[in-house]
Image (cartoon, rainbow, N blue to C red; front, side, top):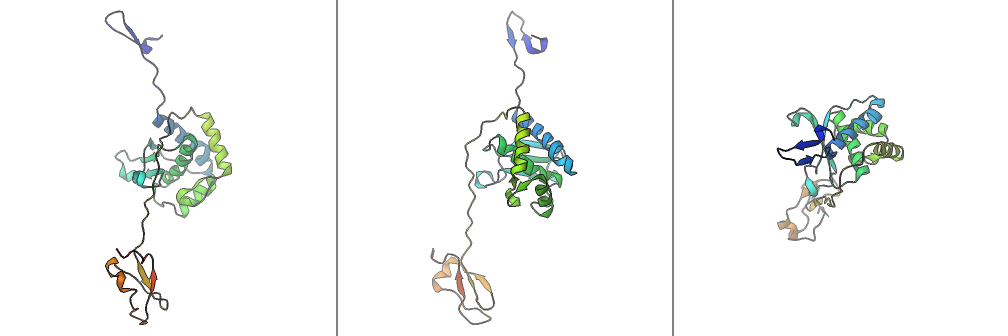
Length: 212
């Protein structure tokens, strides 16, 4: 045992100190470096230095988001801060991390627009860009990287993300000119209004059954 592995008290007691275990954040940083070097750099995209942590997105469990990248302007250390949900297993974590690193490349400026899509498709992602994840080829690459990293030191948290359902208020639309208007609930019992332009009764849109 080396002197770095023990603490000697004033008596005869020796306390052995175990080497520090791999933390989740260290693992995430290692994963981010591998993704940057193995996937992004060959495509000509430089991933900046980032901070990666386990944590829910800003919407918490009320949101379906499983990852979030914050722009550098929001952090005192001028780095992108990425959060990956604790409700993910190892593969879903590295898949989500790859998605969030795309945001870090352009400092979250284009959200899921065409610039994001260009990088995502080049990496091999599929699906709607807001929830883009690895396609078959990229999935194999991610699994290879995962196999070469130390085991993910995390126990998946069994938490369910609930996406808030926002119902649109009742509206009315003129079938001739397309004019639309929102109708307050307290006036639903009066029926759809008359179009001010065409003088015809407008069509009901949405839930008019809930008269509140």
